[in-house]
Length: 626
Image (cartoon, rainbow, N blue to C red; front, side, top):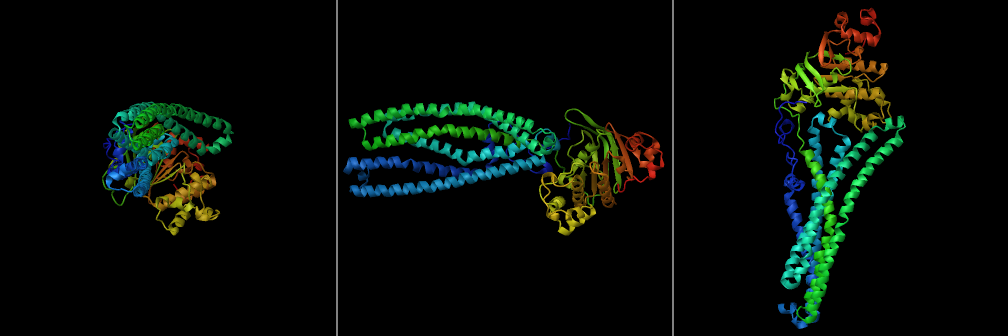
């Protein structure tokens, strides 16, 4: 489908700035995440400083143990004695005091980095979820028609949570491992350069192995995250259609289908698990070689007297602090790769181009409600032409009906009016202004939509009626319900207006949902009312009640009635008949019957009456209202 020229990627509807993260979907997700989280960089730096300080103090105890050994072995020639602390007992007390300061400080910094990283994880998680959801709200209708709800939910929920888990724990672990390698590596070369090379020898192997495993794991975890979307989509779809599944006794078939999708997810995870689980055992072998060299060669030098016993003790303790944390890199990189796969999906969603954006021309007040389709052509992306050179004029304050067979393009007209889509060519105008020039919020606020497919939110009846005007008073809500002839059945419900309607309003009948939808439109009091097959799925009694409601609320208001059932549009000021995306007939009900064209043929099919019979014009079946 072709659209009008859209603003660049750094613009969003109504001129709002694009969400952070940038338009590009290329490049590694980590620098993209860094750009997105620019506002949180001070927190990242502060948390990193606390992590480094905590690790520096965490490495001090092995040194203090070496000093303690030095006091016992060297006595008056110990390291502390060189600082003027003469008595051995005094040296031990001083060492105990230093140890207390170190341990307390380490605990303080551990508390600080935990608070900073974990709060940062929650904040970034919140921002990403809200920003991604806000961006999704701005995307055009075509985007949702090409994607599953479950797939989007997996990005907005599962992927965001995966990143939160890494920030909560993984980032700190990587920083602390790097700090350990740097500080202990330098210390080893200072106190025993001849042996230090054996301590650091495994590090290049470990790092090479880590990056190698990272590259191998990346596509595997990307496949895992993609399958999560598939599985979530299937689950969401099945839960929404649970009544249909039960009606066709398809429970076992759907269980098998979900089981198959879950098995694919299990197998993809299994591939990643088998590879990531190899990391730690291989790294342990490299560490074992280095530890054995230090244990033997350092011990021999201590026996020869060329290496102080205290220094040897420090080396034995500290080499474990250097090498054993490296074994956790496998788990950390595993967490990292999962997070990066999720981050890529989140930021790609944020970078999705918004195809329909609002204009900047102010709305004219008051809105008269004149609508014009000027040579409108509309085609979907797959090339199917729906409207072909459509010309329509809908005068303000009058009821205009649009009828035609299924597939003629009736519902597409509604989508174009609300700018859920834009014309491929031509223009739709409100009070003489192209809809593309108007702000989306102001434009859509002019319309009240009552459709066949009524959507009610999980909440109370009152909340659903007041959805378009959440600040409405209880009296206004009740008045709207009375106008829609919904008040009586609402008060008969168990909790009245506080009754929870269930997901999609499943606790109510179709006619009840339809009348609540009408009350919702009445409360908004829009200049233009759009009725899209509003009575197509209700019984005759409910239809009569709805028609009475519509008769009251359409007076003096621009009303557009999209209908397949012709009995609902007999009183319209003008009726336009669509065929293959074009207007082939226009006129009043009587004029169209007298013309004997397509409308008259459709009438005969629906009523079984000849077009010219008196029952056609004056019979008891005449619709009330629109």
